[in-house]
Length: 332
Image 1 (cartoon, rainbow, N blue to C red):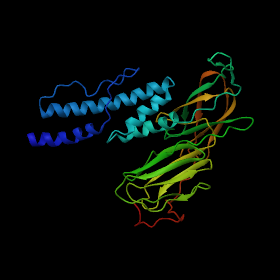
Image 2 (image 1 turned 30 degrees about the horizontal axis):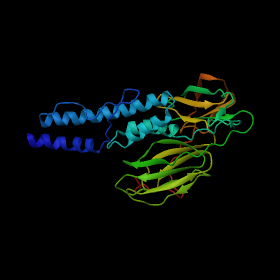
Image 3 (image 1 turned 90 degrees about the horizontal axis):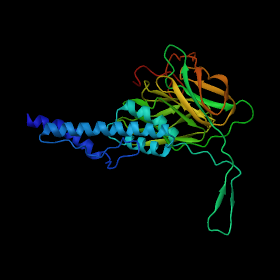
Image 4 (image 1 turned 135 degrees about the vertical axis):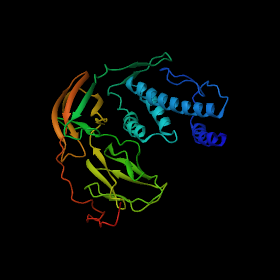
């Protein structure tokens, strides 16, 4: 009996030792001192303590990051979620939930308003005169449409009149190949962003896309290897694997600084939008093209609804990287 308990205990203890220690509570009160003060007298107690500390840490990093995000402390939110993603064996659904928010939290801050001036005096103190801050709008919305739902839809804004500001490329993003799946299934990035395609499977993969003008072929590579691609043109990019026909995902490239990805319920949020007239675009992987609607943005919070279509043509076959139908015995 003791042998079985020790065997069951080994994995949780190894995972726990790999977790980062947190020793001080944060301002949101969600970072208790670790390890938890649980009494350990038996191997069963130790197993319980290891499991409890692991789940408690995951909860605190997940919820603490969201609380920081909601109050506008993006640096703390990103730090919490990056620490969460380093937890060994993190469930895939949590990883897929956190990564889009982390990408938004890590977006470069907009440049400061023009017109700042420093007025030097004989005093060693420097007076700073700032113009009145420009009001910004926040858009909360829900994407709807079609029988399969709108989870994972991509939404973005362009100016209705005049040129939309060019977005800055995001930090390098990652699409994993794990369990013969792409994770995340849909990734939205601004133009100019580099994406690393990391193979975490024991088998080889060959990631490619035929989506012009962003077509590419990364060739055959093994576990632990990442190959990168910079996406310079806006639009949907369908990801495929030349070995495994069942693998499919999308990168959507937007040419706008105001973009987001809807969660599983179709909810999204766009922050820091200057008041004005815009066009709201919405795209889903089953859409032939994005839907659009005019939108007037003012100060503060506003709620909107968007719809997506599900009229994309379904190919009779999954193509190989030459665009030809795959042979039935090749790929799986």
